[in-house]
Length: 265
Length: 160
Image (cartoon, rainbow over all chains, first blue to last red; front, side, top):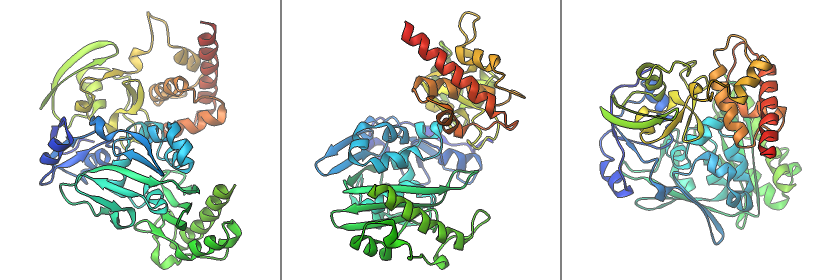
């Protein structure tokens, strides 16, 4: 499959990249979603701005009570980082579960959250951990950043530069994958944070969402038993050839309990 | 159009190409290196896996311009002085193929997985092969071949 023609640009600095990002130009990072969409001719940007070599966006560091990861950091780098493993092991587990090894070598944190695929894993971690997305223009709380299916709060010329994850007391991620595509039918990230328990779900709805009833129950008792009778409403969930909304609602409950068990253990 | 210069299997290569040229087409059609296969063309099957700067990636999901300045290794670049790479040899020894279409990608993925120390046991190998599909479903011998190559290469590295 051959994409429509486009002009490729590789700016040397972030400022230069920002200047080029206008009209229907698109940023290219790992390209593991964008290039597939271009080959199917679902996306046809006239210009591709390759930011994958901007080293200033590629880092993982501990800053006080937060883990800060640059937008160009690949899933492979997150999955194999000793800093991530020591600070938020659940994030390492999540990164290890994205795609396959070849995809993890290319795909980036910034690319994943800029695309906001409803079945992408990272949005669950950002929302459950109360992360902050930093861009070339501002800082955005994760819950305000993910606005809908494939939609974010990013302006046209705004570039994600890093994500700051407050380090939780404990956290875990569990997902049920479509056995063929490996995309999540439901993924649940649970965290026990300084401000209380947080539960974020991906794959099941059109956008990442929290489950307040589970969070309140986990605040009282952080065990799988505490949420065993809490169901999410299938009316809000996706139904497709892979799974009905009712099945996805069931999976959210199971994945949430598995994640809590894993976090508590 | 862009001019790119890179190393392919240790040899310098430069070309003027359309920006939309995928790396797999550049290797196959511009350089005639047809060992790298196009299977699903949707980045799921792994028949097109090559190494770019030492990392196993899907060459159908990357533009050739992105490899400008990089060092690319394809299945044709694994053998040395007429001698098969240990992973190739293990696939032959253990009959790690049926029709052979997925084999180049399987081998390039296996070389990377062994280099990372990820081929620790049969379960780990199967997990690492998630991005490579064998439509003959000949996974059993593929796993056996990778397990044998990993053992042999680790023993050899320890002895040296």
